[in-house]
Image (cartoon, rainbow, N blue to C red; front, side, top):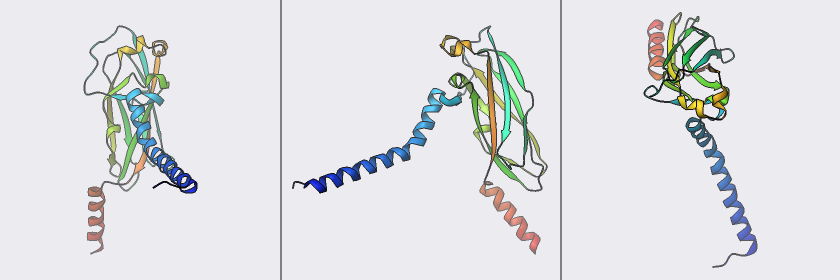
Length: 192
């Protein structure tokens, strides 16, 4: 059965619209995957262990902290910078404090600057991998373990870097169900 001109055109247009919609839907996950694999846009890499090689060359790592507007926590790095050998495992701490009278959940988004360093900055463990829940008045110290990959000295852009800034931004998320359920149970028992 052959299609007439109008039917063929409409079918092609519907196909194009569906294809473009699918590509738009898939673009965010694909872009995130691309950034994680390549370090593009300052996205860091993740490893379960430290580097195999430690160079004599050093690099300075600065630590930055910010928070979403109206997010009530206090959030800051414990130390502003450290110098370590390239490939050496570093351990830094951030501090968070909930000054409110109720629990608040937060999640940290992160990146490194300059963006060219993203593909060489590798986290082994980080508080940013999981959500954080702080009780009223609770203050916590949160670690991040990392290293700068020795391959940075072979990269055309990376070999000129002497300083990397690791930045975190905390934003509020919904309380986990178990925390919310305990709050709901507690408020119901207070009404009786």
